[in-house]
Length: 337
Image (cartoon, rainbow, N blue to C red; front, side, top):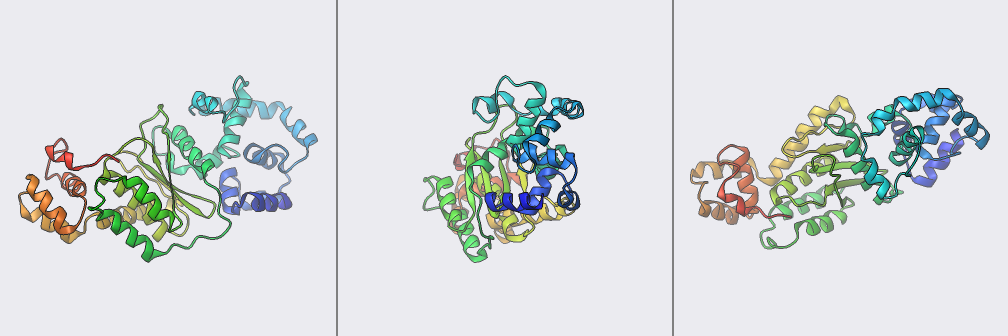
């Protein structure tokens, strides 16, 4: 068992903590490695014969107890976007019920329901945890694991975030491409993945792929202020939360849960505060609101030039503060990105 874990870590550049969370096992149960149950979780997550020989594998699969346990998980498994994943060739078609559950485990690289809850805990507070977890998994499969520990360059990252926020000279250019290039140079991967039609489109997800921080957006359009706020929120986790937290942002509701769960509230507040302050400082916000003429286009244009900030950010902040309506004509200052 120990040798197999070491081989897996060397081959996949996967941390021992990630292995435990994906399997839903404790460190002691993994290191003892004597039970068929632990062997089965390894096989579900990391492939046939990953830690036990084919004879034991056949014996395990033929056990009626295993089949009964897998059948109980069918309602859970069927909540994944099965047809889409099958059309993409990620899980097999025309499989029996127990093999469908195994295919989901293999695709998600988890060994149990406990592993799903541990590793994809950011999705559990949503109405569609399986769909959002599958969406995140699609992004994970596109990112190559880093072989070295990641150390963020705080000054470079903050400088790039401020540039994106004050990017008035490149107002009409592709903000996503600029953000991707700027943060990739700082070691942060930004990717785009098509959302599933079985759930509302997510705004953003942040997670770690081994030692590599990843920010994942849907390919659908969103306005520039919404994109930047989600981006800055995710980057805050890189800068301030070294325990490799993750988050999922859904629409106007942040609906983000951090791991470890004991710190989720504090960490989310920190990330939200960081994003809002980078977007528009408290002093700038006060100056804008004190103007009192923020319903006028010339007011937005004036402060956009004064603060060197994208006008869509000003409109979004005023709407968050309830100063102007969500259906305001000033929405045309927001640029779809």
